[in-house]
Amino acid sequence: MTTDPCDGCGREVRIAGGIGNMWSTDQSATGGMTLELADGTEHFLCHDCIEALPDDREVHAKDVKALEARDG
Image (cartoon, rainbow, N blue to C red):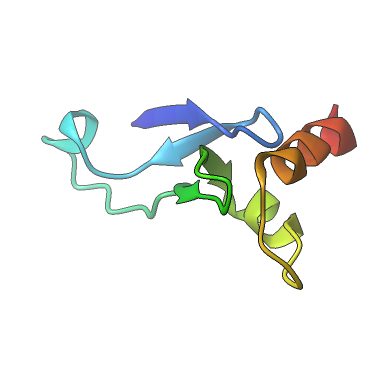
């Protein structure tokens, strides 16, 4: 299993596929995804942090920074 830290909360998040799962029968889903935000930045976020992003406007890096402060 491969993991990456969430840019929002810092929690290690499972990444499905890749070389780490080559010989495994584990078909678990990825726990997050990389998003390209309106300001051109990219951030890997867990599903919980994605849900916490604002949905009434375009999302920017400052919104990811706000997630860090929320959980920090």
